[in-house]
Length: 348
Image: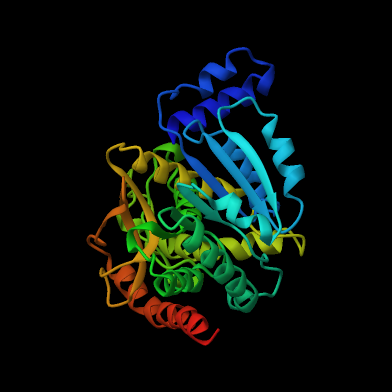
C-alpha cells in the first residue's frame, strides 16, 4: 500500500488535481491487469470515503458503487477524479446484479452503524438480513470474487456469508474475509504513541475476532520492539484497542461511528487482496477467516494473500502469558457469535 498512500499524500500536498504530475503518479502501474471492485453500501458513512480511496487506487480499473439510495450522486462525484478507475453507480435491488457482474473484489460496508449505548449485538438482526441478501446476489453474479466483509458484527456476518455461499454451492473458504484491519491500524497507532517509535515502521498482529474482548492485539510480537512498556501499559493498550470503536462512537456523541478510519482500513485490506490477485509476493494481513488455528471454525490471524485469495492461514506464534489468558477468555464469546450467525441462516 506504500506507493498508493505516497501517491495520495503527494496529490494532497500538491493541491489535488491541479498538479500536472498527478496522472503519472497514479498511473504508475499502468501494466497491471483489469480489476473490478464493487462497494456495497457505497453511499453510507464508510462507503463514501471508501469509494474515494478505491478510486485513488491505481490497481482498480472499474469501480462499481451500489446502495439502496444515493449512489448516483456519489458515483458522479467520485468519477470526476482523474485516476484510472471507471466509476459506475447502481441503486436499488434491481441493479445489484449489474453492479456485481465481473467483480474481482466485493467490499461490503452496508448496514446500520452503531449508536451510543448500542452493542455490536444490537446491530445483529438488521445487518444479518442485509448481509444475507447481498451474499445471495454475490453467489449468483460473481461467485469467484474475493468478499471483504466490513458489516458488523463481523464475528457473525462472516459465518452468515459462509452459510449463504454453502447453500448456493459456491463457498470457497479462501475467498471470504472478515476485515479486521481497523484493529491492526488502531493497535499500531496506539503502540507507536506509547512506545514513542515512528508509526509507519510499526507492525502489530491482532488475532481473535472483531468485537470487544475477542480483539486480541499481540503486543509481545510488535515491531520495532520497545522495552519501555510495562505490563500495565500493555494492558491499557490492549483495552484501548478493544474499545476503539466505542471511543469513536462516544466522541461523535450520537452522530456516527468509526467511518473514516474504517474506510482507510478497508482500503488497505482491499489493496492487499488486489496485490495478491496480481501475484505480488509476501502479502500478509490479519483477517477473520475460516481457520483451523484454534478449535473455532473462524478466527482472525495473519493470512498470506495470493492469486486464489487466502493462500495460507498463519499460526499465532509465541504468546505472552497475558495473551494466552486473553486467548482463552475470548473463545466463548467468539464461539457464541459464530454460532449465532450460522443459526440465523439456518432459521431464515
